[in-house]
Image 1: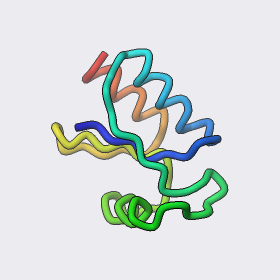
Image 2: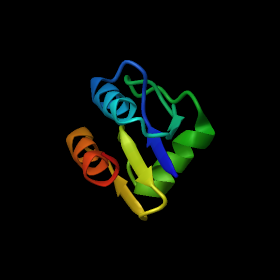
Image 3: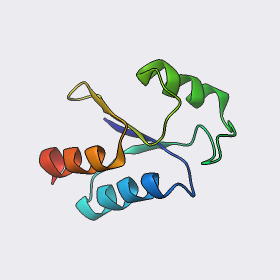
Length: 84
């Protein structure tokens, strides 16, 4: 399963969403906080920080390959390589 922890209004999250959509890849999206940092969902925010140890978005999780990534450019490169 592919999961994206992201925030609406965050340009880095948007670039990842656009690439996943362009590739036709199915994924689960989580909105733990706003781009400004205001937490909107305590449960998913806790998952975000537990999984990666940071309060940083976007955060991409590929449970099939046991991979997690933070930087949008790295995430885009990863999904193109493995799912493109």
